[in-house]
Length: 199
Image 1 (cartoon, one colour):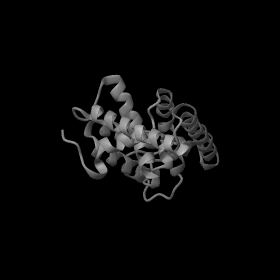
Image 2 (tube, helix red, strand yellow; image 1 turned 180 degrees about the vertical axis):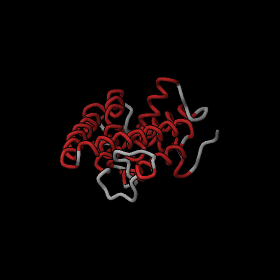
Image 3 (tube, rainbow, N blue to C red; image 1 turned 90 degrees about the horizontal axis):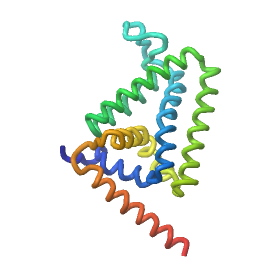
Image 4 (cartoon, rainbow, N blue to C red; image 1 turned 90 degrees about the vertical axis):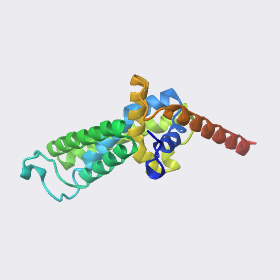
């Protein structure tokens, strides 16, 4: 499989994000906290205006709505599938599982309690990630340099890291070697620039 170009160039996206996440402890923190951020965001998005209640056509119920949360999930899912068919499909399924779970929980909790749960979880997870960068990575988070790319790539990045570590998966032959070379070069450039500024 050949490398994709443009917005669907997984290698470039992964190298960008990976350059900010090279410390094993920081990677572990992100692995634990990124998907809960995605999940709890969907809990809050459940309360956005709905186009249609899916339960009316027999495809669900108990809170599955075609609202911003659904289209947010769909956007992430389609983007991940376009990046890589196999891992992207797994990521897309996880995205929709999060949407279903978040919808059910939010419908049961109601807005007055759900937003408090979301706030507590988001504060905890974001604080953990910023500490991971400050204490272990010693580099500002990717989100401060490229908000859209960092937010969009974070869930897929940690999933790809897990399946690569656990199963040796790579989207195509030579992917990880190429990405590692780019990450090493970017980190070296960052360190060189940091050293120049401090002298």
